[in-house]
Image (cartoon, rainbow over all chains, first blue to last red):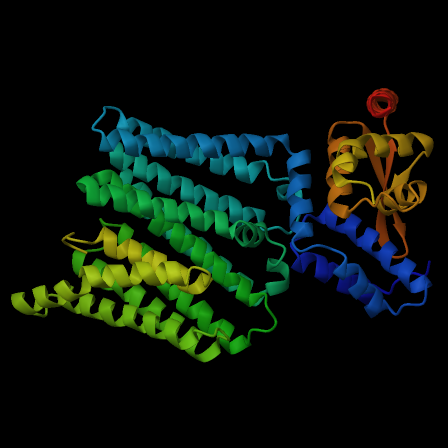
Length: 402
Length: 117
């Protein structure tokens, strides 16, 4: 067999990475295996590019992702612990909701137990990932972000238990998450090649749909409890949706910095918009630091900014067949949210205030957005915007002060 | 090509057997050897082979070493002492099992033929 050149090896390595094979030991091994296959074909007279295409065509879709996840499962019995913990935490969350709805005692304790479970799950998930042992995977930032999320969950527990120090923990977690994520976003923008190996990007990329399913569960629980008895626990679910959702969607934007096909000027615009939107959105959770008018402006301002950005993305840059329709719906979110912000700004008289809010919070608007969410569920950017928008509009329904 | 169902249940034993015959082998070599010995009937996919290799390594049945070959790293697998013992047990279990299945197939075929007569 003849040997392949370093550039040919590099080409195969890029192919493996793009198809989700990021665990270095396995990647090295698969690289050797594919090279052997290619060399065998080349010995029979095929050119490298033809042989590579032939080998690629024989590999089923998502094969590498599947191999990686099966390999991870087989070498890390500890990951099973994470799976068990995840199920336990979510079961407690479901039980807490059911207890609250049925007015059984112990709902609050169950909720706190589920937060403690989620915290342990998070720590277990980070520490038992075999990739964490490899260098250049952004371990420090991942640990820092984990600590910040744990602080956030602890602050929620303190708030539920009415313990002192909850708001201080909240401020600490919000400020640290803004600092870490903003810094990380700039790092990914500046050093896309190094960042492409980072665990957090891989995790968010590979587990995107599972994370979104969890966010949808938070929304469904929050909305059900809100409509059922408007209880404080519904607020907890919405807070989880908004905080984890904003962090997840913020990190999801970083993958565009690694994509050579996205122009540098567009990447810069995305960086600026995402940092501003995340900071504006997450800051109002520091209720002791941010007063009501500022909170209202920051919160709804984020949605106006995000929906305009999504509208521009669809109308100007997307190849989607429904791009103009998606753009127009995004603009309608911006328009209605602007009316909402205007009504809540205190600049209008009482009748205009009620009139605008009547339009914004009318059943037809909710029905329209729910329908759009279901109809365009397969568009990730639009789905993200609508999930967060729907969450915020259900959460703030008949809620004074925001 | 042989049914995937049968292959899935026997890969572990096949890998252990091949490694007990040859001191050390790498991934491609294992799949090529299986293909050769089965007259192209059994083709181990990447997805079937590597999770098993990593699992056997995690269970302490295989040890590994890497060598640089043609500008790339190649990982060789070999049986540990424990792996050698397990290989013998697994191969003998599989042989017994194949024998039992053969008996069932022959018996049911014979009774079917006598019924036809």
